Image (cartoon, rainbow, N blue to C red; front, side, top):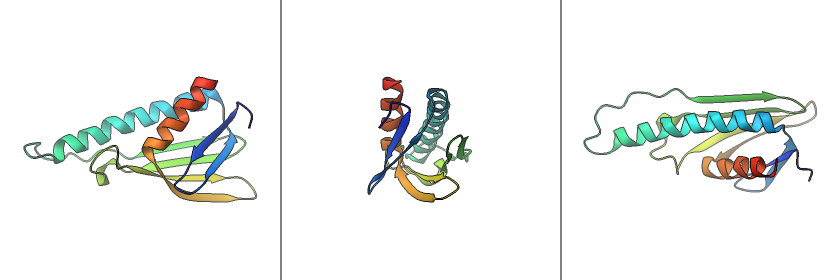
Length: 116
């Protein structure tokens, strides 16, 4: 695939689509904020952590050659490493909606940014 294609590895298979480096940086920023929320939830759920303050969900949207939406509610995952995201990739002719492991999405975005 071309360098301008982002490949996201799913539990079963993968999906690749045209994605700009700028959009990948914005996605990385959104994921970094999500990680902070997940860490805050994980810290509060440990013994002696105190009351859990609900964190805002991550809702990332990108519209280009494809429509990409990534959603994650940090309040339902015990640790960042257990978290999954709801991923939707849509064009005029196809719509794919599935779950993906957050850690794998992070690796895929970082790899894309290293190449671009």
